Image 1 (tube, helix red, strand yellow):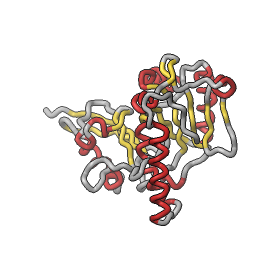
Image 2 (cartoon, helix red, strand yellow):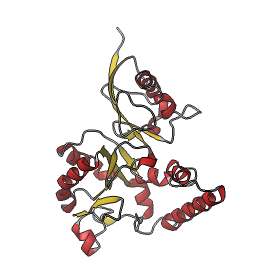
Image 3 (tube, chains in turn yellow, green):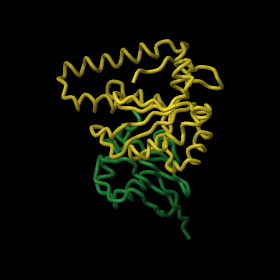
Image 4 (cartoon, helix red, strand yellow):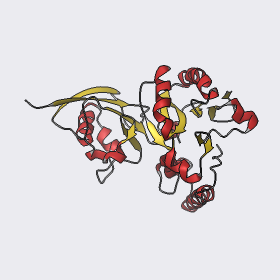
Amino acid sequence: MIVDRPSSHFVFVVPEDHVYRRYNYINHDGKPLTNKEYLESWGKWLVFDTAKELADLARLLDPFVEARDVPAIKYDRQKIEEFGLDRCVMCIYCHIARRDAVWDILVSVGVQQKAWAFERETLERWQPGGANLERWIEGRKLSPQQADVVRRQAEAQFKHLFGNEDAIFTGIEQ
Amino acid sequence: MPMQLTVTVNLLGMRLFQVRRDAMELTIDGQPTLAQVIDLVDDQNPGFRQAVLDQAGGLSKQIAVLINGDNAQFRGGPNASLADNDVINVIPALAGG
C-alpha cells in the first residue's frame, strides 16, 4: 500500500501487513536480517525521475510490494535542492539475493537505467566525514562546535543501531 | 585492425556541473578504462572530470559511478576496465540517502 503522509518528505510503498500487522519486510526467505546481514546484503535500486513519474511508477509497483516480490519502496515527494539533484529519487529495496529478480520487475514496468547501492554505502555517507552528513552540516551553516556535536551524535547513533551484530535489525526512523 | 568497444554513458539527476549531454554512446579503440571514458565525457561536458575525480585522482565521494548498475569503486575506480556494451550511469552520491 502507498503510505503518503504530507508531513513526511518521503512517500512509502510497503505491504499492508507491515502497516497493520507488523510484518518485517527486511528479511531473506522470511527470516529477519541481523544488523550484520543488513549491512552486508540489503540495498536498493535507484530510479531518477520527476515526482509525478515516480508517483505513477509507485502505483505500478504497489501490487508487487503487496505480493512481497518487492520488499519496499521509498521516494521523494519533491526534489532535495540542497543535495544538488535535478530529479526526485526512488529507492526500491531488496536483499542482494533478490536483486536480479527485482530488477526484472522494474524492467517490466519501464525502468531502464541500472543504479544499485548497498545500504551500508548510504550509512557510511551519514557518518562523520561522509558526503551526506558534511553537506547537511554545511547547508545548515552550523558553527564548528555545533558541527562536532552533530558528528558525535551520528557516530553514537550508528553504534547504537549496529553495535550488536547479531541483533535483528529494527529499522531507521525517517 | 584495433578492436573497438562501444559504451553508453548516462548522467542522471546531476546538478553539480553544467550538463550539456546527459546520454552518450562512445566508441573507443582498444581496452578502455573508466578514466579514459571520463576524459571523453569531459570533452562533451566540461567540468565533468573535476566533478567525478577527487584531488588524488580517485572517484569523488560526491558522485557515484555505476558500471552496469554496480559501483565502480568496487571494480578499481578509475582503473576499472570496460567491456563492449557496458552502461555507465553517473549519479550524485547523495541520491537515495
